[in-house]
Image (cartoon, rainbow, N blue to C red; front, side):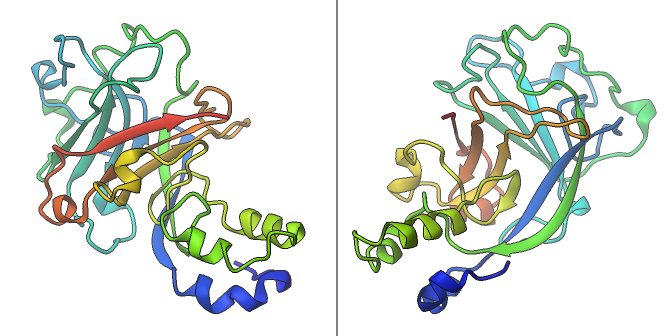
Length: 250
């Protein structure tokens, strides 16, 4: 990332915040049951394994990450599959618990797996989160702190309030939007309490609006995004029962 000359005096402070991340591009494509994807068919050996919400209704399958298909990230498992489900309603499960399932061992024998999502045609949410299912393509990168993140205010306070141009440059430079795993979250509204109070500080997965002919046409409300976040302790222990989920739009 090219460093703006207007922010050169903050370089040392900003570069001290570098974190690795895996940027994700979701590309329309057919996928195998075990591959990384958005939408489509999750890895399932039998329909009875499909997760249900607290009322016994099938949840909405949002995404799946095969950890062996992406470059390794510090503290993340290096094998197995992570699946991300939310409650199937018109608010994309915002007020309800999400479900993240970790499958450490999996088969590539398609004769033993479901190859079609058994509930894909039965989801009830009025506005789909994406128009097309597709494959995840990963690019490893590293990024500095985002303007919506804990610790940014310390850098922001180094700028005189009257220097509006410098402030604008800093916010533009510290925009951490985009789909990814690891790195820094980009909250389009206020940061959720679970992040601000340190309950869940690791960005497990962020999925961002992405439109265009070669995309899966992802849209959260009005150009929004979502985050799945977890504590470092739970991540290290491969405990995905305490993942926090939030989404917002402009």
